[in-house]
Amino acid sequence: MSMDAIVYVVDDDAAMVESLSWIIESVGLKAKIFTQAQDFLDAYKPEQHGCLLLDVRMPGMSGPELQSKLLALSATLPIIFISGHADVPLAVRVMKAGAVDFLTKPFNDQVLLESINRALRFDKTNREKQQENAQAEAKFALLSPREIQVLQGIVAGKQNKVISSELMISLKTVEAHRASVMKKMSVRSVPELVKLVLTNGVQEPATQE
Image (tube, rainbow, N blue to C red; front, side, top):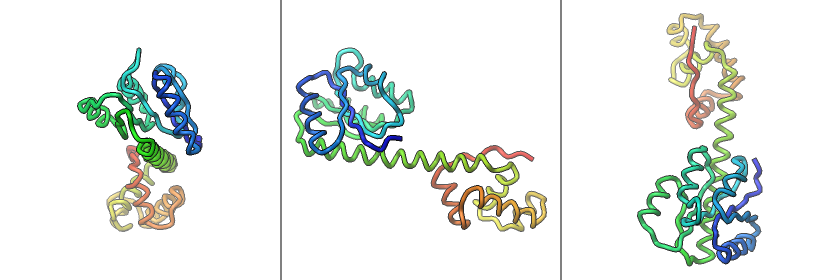
C-alpha cells in the first residue's frame, strides 16, 4: 500500500478542476485529475491510499454510476461528491451507499480541505484495519483442526479441563494445543488472544476430527 495520499478529482469542468487542484496542492497533497469517470476507473489502483472528489453530473458515466461500479469492485476508496445542485434525495442516496460527504458548489476552501482530511483519515484507518484482519486470517490458517477446537473453547471462556472433557482428549494434550495456539497467533495472554479473534472478525475455519 502506498502511504503517500492521492486526492483523485473526477470532474469534466476545466475551471473547477483547476481550482480544486490548486486548493489540494496548496496544502501539500497530491492531486490526480480525470475529466471522465471511465478514465479514472481504468487507472484506479485499489492499493493506493487516498480519496476521490467526484462530480455528480458528467457526460458518459455519472458520479453515482462510478460509485456503483467501485462498490461492485469492493473498492473502499472514500468518495466526496461535489455538485452544482442541492439535490437532497441524491445526496441521501450516495451517502447511504458509502460516500463520506456531499458538497454543493460553491463551497468554502476550508470546508473542502476538512472534508478531504476526514476522508483520508478514514481511508488510512480502514486500510490499517484490513491489514490487521488479513494478518489475523493468515495466523488462523496455521492452526490445525484440533487447535481450532481448542481455540474455540478458550475464546468461549472454558477451562482446560472442560475443553479436555468436551473434546475427549487428555488435559496435557489440551495444554499442548493451547501453547501451540498462543505461539501461532503471536499472543502472550488469553485476553490478547480473545481480543485478536473478536476485534478482527476472523471467520473460524470449519473444524473436523
